[in-house]
Every structure is written in structure tokens, then in C-alpha cells.
Length: 70
Image 1 (tube, helix red, strand yellow):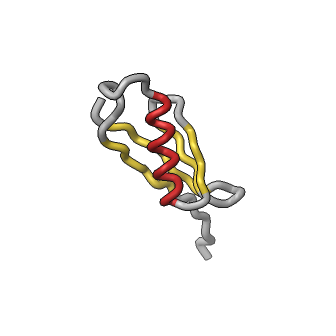
Image 2: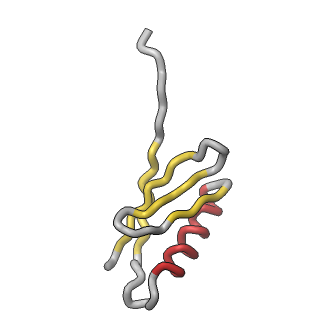
């Protein structure tokens, strides 16, 4: 596997939360810099051996915004 994709959303409590597609990996942080560090740590813990660990981590940022038409 060369790449793993994380969905990143703003948390209701503040900060950000991220979860991987096709893997049971989740983490959260107060800011994006901290989130990237936490994601790297979570990926390292999830995969048993360095040969299985993805070389690229892709973040898919989801922005949920609601506004009025009128």
C-alpha cells in the first residue's frame, strides 16, 4: 500500500477529528499541525511492519457549511 486517505472534519467541541478510509484509525487534535503528528503516530501504531505502512498520507478536508438562499 502506497497511500492512506483520512477524512478530516472540524470537531463540534473545537479542533479537528480524522478517520481513515478502509482502516479503523481515528484521531483528533486542537489544530492541523498537531493533527498531522497524531495521524502519523496512529498510522505507525496501526500497521505492524514498516513494509505495510503507507508512504503517503492524504488528508481530505470536509467543510460543512449551511447558509440561507434569501
